[in-house]
Length: 402
Image 1: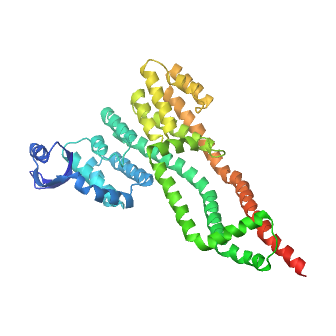
Image 2: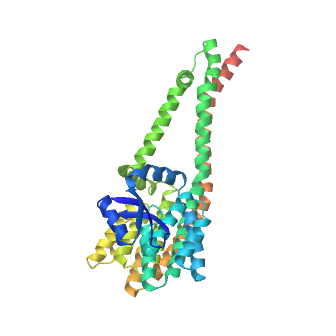
Image 3: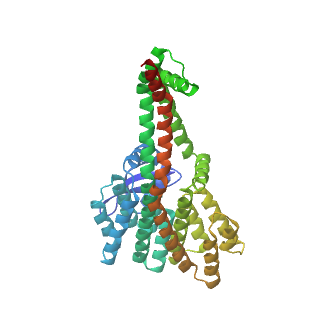
């Protein structure tokens, strides 16, 4: 169990942090062995709700992590001690949660813990990839270089994700606005238009009768329809957060028309870029593949990379697994094979990530152009159907009256 503690050292300075121990008495014993006088100690469970709420409303973003590592790199290059560097960064950090994390890291380092070990305690902020690069940097004496690697890597991943989000934002907004307007029209405007037809007691085709019935229902029970729609949307979001839902959604994403290839290219870019960074940092390839599989953010590709790691354990090659899987482009498999044969796998991965990053950029720039006519057709069909169903019968009736 983890315990949060506050204590004083022999110099009278306050320390706070987290200890993992089997009991409160064992945690007190650990503090005393480290020459710390405990002021308070309590199970972390009592603070879980507070920590969760704080983290939800003040989450550490990728952009903040990039700034953190960039600032840390500059300070390390200027030969500022790691503790002083972290304190300086903490004083100008706007995220309350990040301030708390950095404060605990400072205390842990002052108590003799390594920089990477202090980061490892905060897996909700620092990924396994980041921690392992830092461990490699500490072991090789090139911590500054590792920090630069991490900053550049997080920045590239952030840019890649934002590129896809920005490309999908326009069509999503258009469809949401269209849906809201359609809901309001059917609920409040359509019943008033169909009342004219009802008053005249005219014969209308089946599709007009269908729209009239829909308008009557929505005018009375629009609130129930809204509750059902919102409930369904909430249920879908909840399901997608479950393990089974995430697996299904990850499978659907890579098979979608138009945007599916973009998602596949994003995962290939993320894989090659992160694996290159880990291998350049001296991480063994099997461990590197295991780490990359966890940060690629798609369970389908995660399974592929874990299979590649298992293949290497058995004495095989990564390219063998890739060649058998249709989700890995043939060019990637062939280039990986060349890298394995020549012993320059990290260099080859760099070329792969660069190529697919450029392809992703081009495809996301063209995405709005591709989706715009599709959206216009969908909206045009919906508006046209309503016009033919309601307005045309009204005009016909008006013509007969004359």
